[in-house]
Length: 305
Image 1: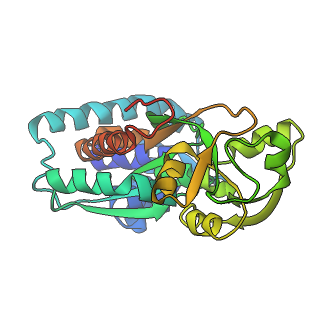
Image 2: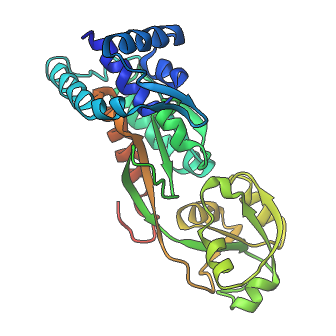
């Protein structure tokens, strides 16, 4: 069987979409449709049928997938042994999903590390949307994503970047906040929060579980506006330690412990399982992981790199 047909079948099974398969294989949609028609004729089975959630595999396709997927991995690995990915000569484009927190704290080191080893590589950054990023990775729209929320899809691989915890920030000369305020004082102040789409909603979940309500005066879509808002108001904000420490460097803000317990959390680097077959994608994953750990060393809650 034509190897391209095997690759088309495996990608269709994983993506459940002709459009996404074409994107991942860098071909046109008619090419994928033609390949599927050839597969159906060759195997005398529909293989994939249209459903509300995409192209649903038939029983025959489900039986075929493990063997064909494993065969494709073995073939790709064999080719990789002969033709290694050379970052110094590559002009590939890699896409990573980051929150603006990630852009502020991680992107400069990621870019520096990538440009040092692969000056011809292009990196595109897209805004992280935790509700869509798993699907973006599966479709091939995104090569990697850094996210604090646990993404439970089985087709995603996760590498731990760092361990973090939440703290609070206020204006240094806040008239009522000095040191570490108790819970009533903390709740008596107005708060600014970052939209839950950023993936940072753990503190709010803890408060909700304990039936504790705080006075939310402002909701913003990004972390980057927090220093100016806090510095020119009496509002408080709950932030991850690494970004809070960065915001407080100029002396306008003060960082203090929360007056209630919130578990620490891990920030992870996510890639799609299919990208493990590509030496180029593995290089990008390892570069991002190493750069992110370097960028956050010394400002995490645990001090781990």
